[in-house]
Amino acid sequence: MADSVTFKVEGMKEFEDLLKEIQDDFGEKDSKKILNKAVRKSMTYVLNTAKTMTPIDTGALRASLRLEVRKPSRKDKRSKYVEDTDIVIGNVTTAPGSVLAKKKFMNVKSGKIQQGIDSDARAIANEFGTAKMPAKPFMRPAMESQGGNVVGSLSSSLKSVLEKYRAKQAKKG
Image 1 (spheres, rainbow, N blue to C red):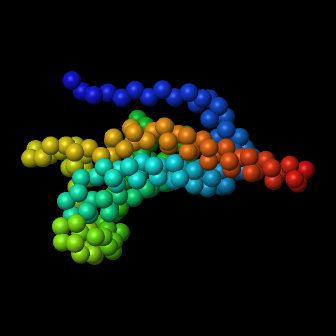
Image 2 (cartoon, rainbow, N blue to C red):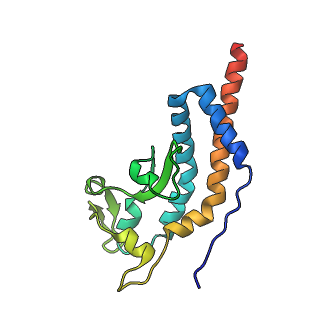
Image 3 (cartoon, one colour):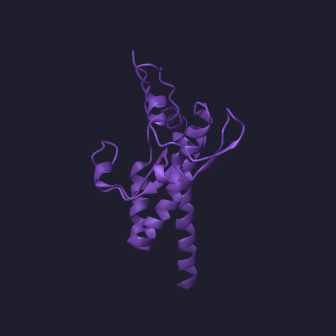
């Protein structure tokens, strides 16, 4: 029997209204900057938890994890989790090979600082397992355990920005 997780989200209508208000008040360019910053801050909880839950062999997988916040691509929009109207998405992922080749990390096995990380499928193999290795998930549990913190941080960040903006507008008017 497969494990299942159920989320209950309350206040989504109010949250959507807040996002619309930010876009109306700030304009599209500024609202994207505000959302990017808020999403990055809120997803840091997931990144930090994923790093602590990552299985360690040499430490390269942990060192390769990063937070990516960006406009959704066409490929992203094919996912059932991304809507055509989404302005920004945030996810925890491994860095691309060009970044990993330059990255330094402490190799747990050798105890020495190592330059460069091989770009491979370590994250996927650990998360879902292989024919020869059982799954050792760390990304999904990190997201599941930090969902409340992500939503709370995102809403408080957006609320704070909106309050500062309103205070500034009140001083002008």
